[in-house]
Image 1 (spheres, one colour):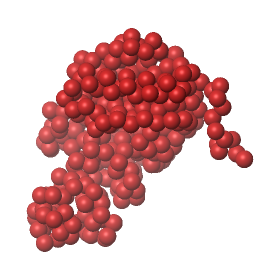
Image 2: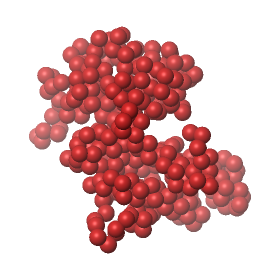
Image 3: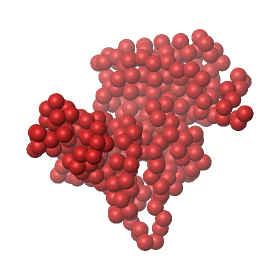
Image 4: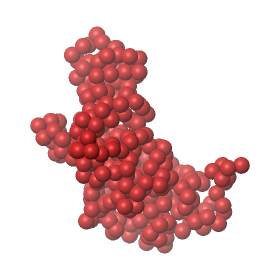
Length: 325
């Protein structure tokens, strides 16, 4: 039997990894080789910072009760996270503001704790155990409702001077474009995310209220990114053109990152990666069009992520074991 199919050795170091999203808190016991031994899931409390911390602590207690040998805690949190202090300054879809999360979890559990941005944690997981395993230089873009970014450069997570770096979704690509949820205008997220796909889908349906997009959604104003995907999968020309536009802008963003960091590999994660080549083919074409020095270099492959929704949890736990808190 191959080693990959064997259960994790009971003496292998383990940590609790937590991924805090806008709607759910995913926690798990993770071994040093990225194997998830057990999972726990809870809804993210809305508008209540103490309740969010309490939900995390409840998940930690539940997992520690069955796995008393866990050695550390790692958290991946959406938003602006100071490194290494683990203070969450701000998150667009969560209640916490200036939350000293690393200190609170350490004081409550006594376990060494790290808190990092969720996309940083996911990038580390994909670099260690996923689509970029073995790569020393890689870029991760998580394309979902918004766009997150993570970089591994020289075998290390790149965070910038204080932990706020690699916010690739908020590169300005069209300063005369759409407003972003972050308060700026023209971010990559406004033209290459799931929200962008839904918005352009509604615009297309309003222009053609008798078309497939409007019919599938039950009205032009009800079109979502998922509806656009269904229509594109069924061969609808308007929906496919929307994916061409989405992929074009995603490729523009990827090209900028390639020009800056020269990665070996670009990994695309998040919910929209499920659309497969509908998204990736135009993104690769745009990357080829806008990469600097194209005739004198090789383009990095653009590939789908492998770890799915568990990447943040696995990466956070791995970072915790690696740093010892």
